[in-house]
Amino acid sequence: MNLLCYQLSAVSQTLKNDNDLELIAHRGGVVNSQSPENSLKALEEAINKGYYMVEVDVRLTKDGTLITHHDKNFTRYYGEDKSVTAMTWEEIQGLTGDLGQKVLKLETVLAHCEGKIHVMIDNKIKGFEKEAFDEIINLLDRYGLRGEALMIGTEASTEYFTGKIKLSCSIDQLKENVNRNDFNPDNYYLFSGTIPAEDFIWAKEHSVMVVGAVNTWAYAQKNKKETPEETIDKLKQVGVTYFQIDSIYEPFF
Image (cartoon, rainbow, N blue to C red):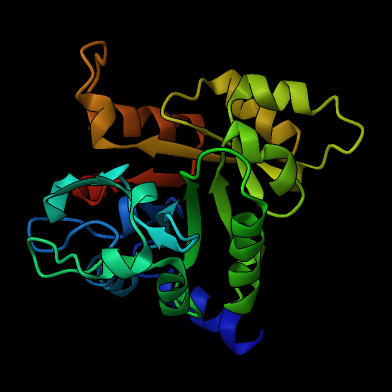
């Protein structure tokens, strides 16, 4: 085992329980009132707690810089009602969050992850931006992260990233993709907050990774009729072992 693999294996043991579950920290790490999303503080806390992976939101600035930021604008946390795509990196560097944090370049985050934690990229870039997509792949390779990386993709970027990184799919998308001449289960993973047993079985029969999602925004929806704990229990019973979660749900694991 090389040093990088050994380090990642070692940190991932902390949060594993008897069911061998692997947790993915949503929105950049362990987020709370003192640790803002997509910050180095949140990321470091996820690393220290032994999360298997961290999910980071990626956007593109006006001048083509890749940053980690969830919202379309900077109103929340930074009080700036301008869109990411309307601001240059130099302008964005002038912003300071309400907890003293700064917006980070994707490269800064990936460099901090190297040898410590795997990454899930939530691609929030609109349209087809080949140079930006090339740079994402180059950065993942530079910091030794592409082998285990996952991506939540977009329709415009799907064909570009297929075969380069494991892409999120619904069960319907997977059943369509399996008919492709170039179908490879390593290119995809099933990603959902609701995974019936038959979908899990189908994915496993086709050697496709399965990741359950348990995020706070889903429970703000009026049609959500179960609690996060109930969702987690259902996913566990089906056989799911990878979970992307908001860190407030960590006690349920």
